[in-house]
Image (cartoon, rainbow, N blue to C red; front, side):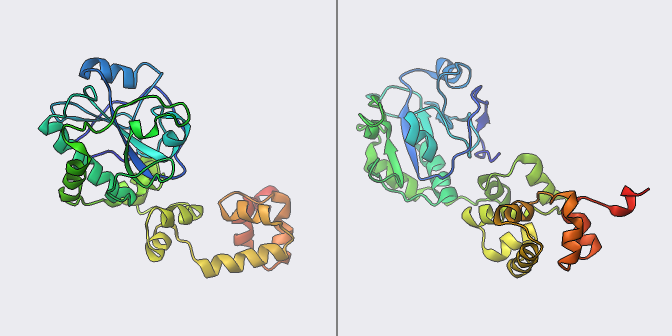
Length: 280
């Protein structure tokens, strides 16, 4: 799980599925204060969010970056990252809260290539927007967001653009691609390969062809050749996709693979079947 540097992590009790995409950032205000807010957003089991910023400028993280949330109904929960701010919508943010929020939003925009604009959902989700921008959409009825008095959207966007450009680490990029902590540790510390079927995930997360290939050991030309040989051995498209993704072929297909030109070691690796041991 990728964590925002310097954030205090308190996990929400709600377990969510992964987001399939990240289009925008939704800005909220809680209408409450720190102690009650943190309990509600982590322990109530009714609502949560990715980040929470106190009036003192402290940042809390309650969900993994890849997670959906329960914050603003179905679509926004599944395609956006949500930031709650301590305080009511009419109350201006403090300077510390404003600076912390701008810095966090800049980091998220860099991580997910989100344009620094005030977008207009549901017509356009690519950018940052208020919870109030969803008023009437899918049952949303909250009027919170960036306080108009301070900072207001123009000032807020200017602060995001002016914030120091963050350095996104390889660990953070792998977490963005959906890898768990143990997998990331294995890849970074032990030189282990990522699963070959994660090549597309890495490319989608912004890795170049060479980087994704190096991390997974994926070779497009070699894989195309293996696919042809599996087709020759009589496997269907779904079975081939499954095998190329790391699943084992049926043990009974060992002979088919040999007849299709696979060596004994390759056939053993693909099926998990060792005929020598089977006859011991």
